[in-house]
Length: 426
Image (cartoon, rainbow, N blue to C red; front, side):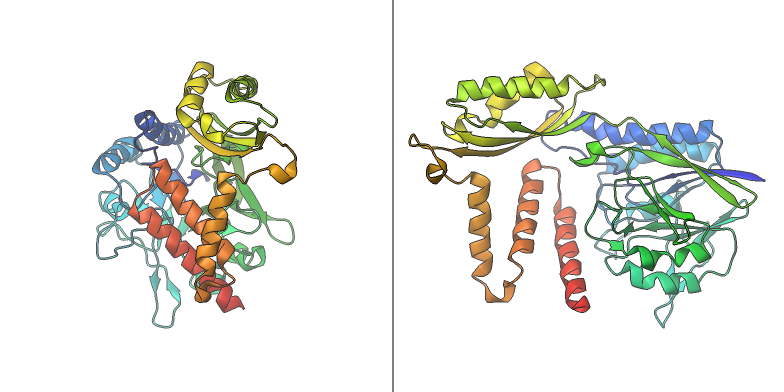
């Protein structure tokens, strides 16, 4: 019997740029991508679809996002294709006394949410999926046993022996929202390759999520066993350099064969524009237009692009003369971007010239002020770099207008878990 399934992850429904002219269009990008994946699953007549976490961008979503999700997943339900999912760190709801949107989808039959139970001794128990309750630790589809484990934090690697001990069946898949060093591009929520390898003895295919970059993990003997498809749409700036897609997997006579199916995310450009030596703002603006136009010329996609531009160089005018509005108007003439983020790292050079007369950039001043504030508290000594990065990350997210309280709390929780892990290791 031949079985096929589709493995995707990190869809991030609900992601957008709030209070931005392109907010509605960017919001639709992620639903269009999920819709294409659903259509492909139906066209391929797969036996089931796996979503390895982060279906949503935040745990607290808008009702319209929930409604659009149901609308998009309806075709899978109509075609009797089970959609099996686990929760990622973005799906996770911090107030556990409330039902999550993932649980609601599972109770309504649009997904089958997998979540194991824990024993009194700290072990794992994977109960069979209860269709009435919409919950369980594993589900069987056409002779394949699919186990599920969502995001469990920075200590995931230490849980692997207990996960494997709880598995008693054959023909197994593990759906797991976790990264693996050094393949995963994210810094938090990973395990070491040697910690992951025992999973290959209990599971024929480990369906990963979390990092938005595709990669494959093999045993020391060279057998591939764990697969991360990455996110099918570019979620954050910097992902434009990653392949984007999902896996179509065929199982025949117990042999798993994977095929990476590429998707078409919205075009994204992250670039540095060098304005070094520009004497005045007008000359700098001409160079800015020329450099951006040359980079945009390589795009074959006619959709409005997403741009992150960093301005660098020592210039003879105050950096504020190249304000965001002035640069935005110039960009509209070139490519009419859907969303732009500009990082002004220009440094002002006085008339005397030379390195000794160079003034610090705004970014350098920000970092120095934050470091001094952190260093003023003795209990935070030796944590200055981490706390400065965290502070700037929170600042950037708030300025982008795309983050809510749950995400900010998630950043703080992730930092706390990371520092706790470091202390425990030490």
